[in-house]
Length: 157
Image 1 (cartoon, rainbow, N blue to C red):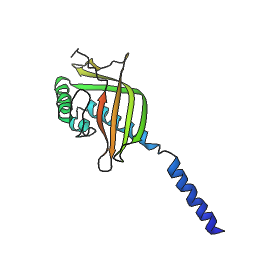
Image 2: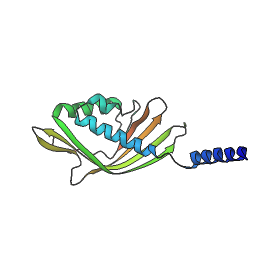
Image 3: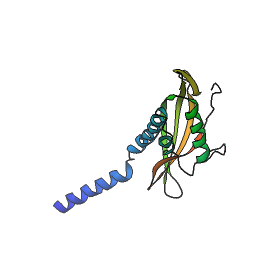
Image 4: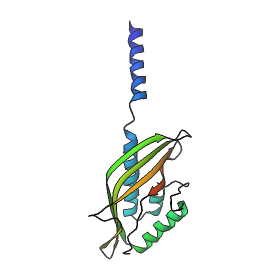
């Protein structure tokens, strides 16, 4: 009788593992976005870029070095930054290579602060901008941003 009970428990655990999605993957994406925003607020270029993949390439042809250069230019122009996102939805699938890939859709607003005056950079508090961010999870480096879609920078700066 004990053998059957142990086998049933093992079977239930295996079925739960197989059929229930891990709830922490979406939370991991939130942690990445929070990390980028916090590093931006601290003007920590390396902190922002640690969340981007070296293999980053978007529809505009920008690569990791281009994104880093753009971020550095903004860091040089402003004393600080403020940002927030909302309405996050995340879809996670497996790639052909067996890695996990996530597509995060959310609204964001980012302002640069110069002489205590906020200047909209990406969206605004009243009208946030919608972004689609694609991330890939590798066993060595975890989740990294590989593509961003929907960036329309304000020209007020």
